Length: 341
Image (cartoon, rainbow, N blue to C red; front, side, top):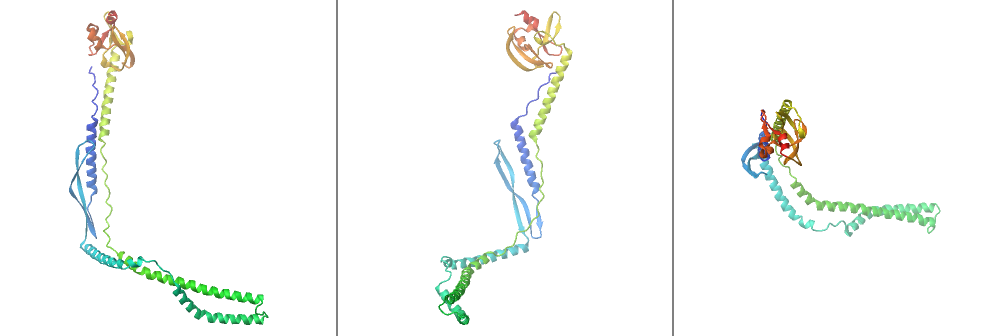
């Protein structure tokens, strides 16, 4: 009966290197698939390889990947418009430079809103219109009060004249406020005019770039090489375990399980031979005890936990106590060991 050998564990370094190479290849494939040249009524977009780029990976190796250039080209008509637009912008920019130098001194001074001369002029213009009107209104008020029998100097007379004077003052104040507001607006407009002119020059229109359609992105799924290696190793280990269990079951069916120390064994003449081959045992634990000067172990054999010695260790000190079963596995004569104590 052949004893199965456990599969060799995969080399993690080599697996990681292979996975890195596959990832790099996948990335280059995706880039090549997604670089689609485009042609539109206003221009074209093309890709071309422009040498390579090298880098050192985490594994210390040097990797080389392609480097690409994206080129945008306008149609002759669009290129002519762009050239004219650039020339116009250059001219307007120069005008802006010249004009901005002129307004430097203007921006460096404080803005003065209104003055005494403005107010005097407003009063002059307002009086020419309002004074005759107020004189007529005052005369009409005096006549009305006299007709009502209200004498000058009386409380009623003084109250009416005070109200008239306050209304007259309010009218002149409103004239000054409105006139001052208009004057300030004119001063601000005069100051802002050169600034607005330069702003208009700097906001000239430009020829827009061609609009390209969105290229559909092609996704190339990466190969999970590390996962495949792990799965393959797991399957090999499962096959090994299955084979080992099958052999153990077969051996369990061939031999009766009994004996001192609980070892699997069979009767050979006057002695009791127990299967004690290390290859048949698993989960081996040294109990710290000894039997006939040999270490005693606890282990699993033929599906159950037992205690005993190892045939290979017995063979080194007492080869006559070890026999070979036709299956190729070694057995120990515990009777001989007992007699040696």
